[in-house]
Image (tube, rainbow, N blue to C red; front, side, top):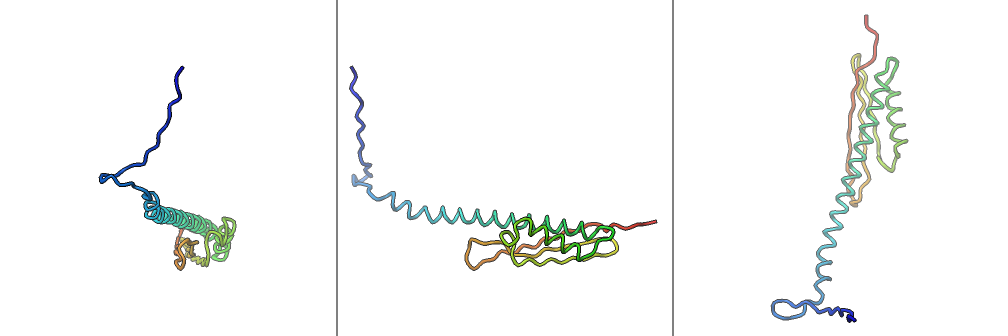
Length: 139
């Protein structure tokens, strides 16, 4: 009958033969801030990207409403604001400012806002614009 293998754990020794006790703690002290920084940078980049995506989609929605045959700049601003509200409102974009402009040939809506930030004291600004040709009857 075989005897069970006995696992013997020994402490690692460095070149000089001294014990390397506490090296894991030092490694964590050095690596954890770097890992948390990387994590927060990734989160902030995702929040800015999401804010820009919502802003451009709202600008496109507003431009379509402004460019409609009987569309107005007020309708475009209202459509863009309603889109932002349905996409999350202040949880996605804050301090939203919507401008709409319509000419005889085109309609343009611009969204300016700030996104949420995980960095205290820093508020990333987002500005997106969309244009569409104005619908009109021609002869």
